[in-house]
Image (cartoon, rainbow, N blue to C red; front, side):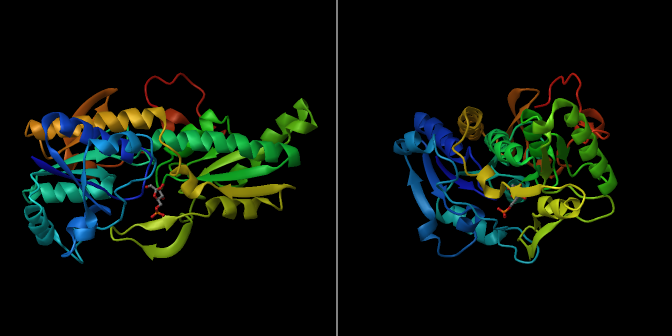
Length: 360
Ligand code: F6P
């Protein structure tokens, strides 16, 4: 059996451990693993000689501990309406004598996998995105490491914020989902958390900051600094999200970025010392956490197991804390966004302080 493996979309910590987990299980069964470089690009071009690499058990030790993707990533969409390369992908799969494919990625990469599965390819998906917004799974690779980076950086920023008594806007990723901001901000005990799922007004933001400062005054002068975690997709009521630039990728997405700076600019005349920082790609660049290594390994093992059992057309996933599988087509269902009623305090612009039963 020959299985092709690719990583698509943005890089995320956990991709390499997942590849290691695939190779580990494949070597138990004597299967060959063929690495396909730069996501779907490897199968969407005629001359892909430089995109192909055979992966044996010797890679496991190194891959198990590395962030990013040793197979490289791209946002190539082989099934886009404008440039549909499905036939070429199928031709390449035959040429490379691949019996099955394992695609590791988010909704775009796995969505393309679902379309190709409908066209007859044997595809299994592994969920990856730091945004934690995929339908059909409670966990996606990269989320835990990114949360750890956010928590650690908020702590670092707090040193500067305290020293200068600053209102500090710290922007984090997440696209249209507020999970990274909400759970990173929760762990960092952020003073305010702004998420895309709740549109706020400037007056509201200013009054919550002021209320926080008034409360701090009672604690003493040294406490007059505030940490505001802003999700890149958070926006003022009636306004659009702040875009990083005008570019649109092959899946039709624009890039977000800059809302933290925008809000800082709007608030600096109301509060004396304001600062802004964005974590951007640092969130994706750390070595994978214990959780991402373990989940990557298990997802990789399970993906090979599915192929062995003839269960293709599925994504390995975690539901109700159990490793399981869901049809790949589920990836196109509504994304998992923060349930504001359940988890967000719209008065305090922060995480709801109540008993949380299951969601992490
Ligand atoms: O989906 C993961 C993510 O990191 C988002 O949080 C962010 O908006 C986007 O990717 C950035 O994409 P790019 O790597 O193309 O700049």
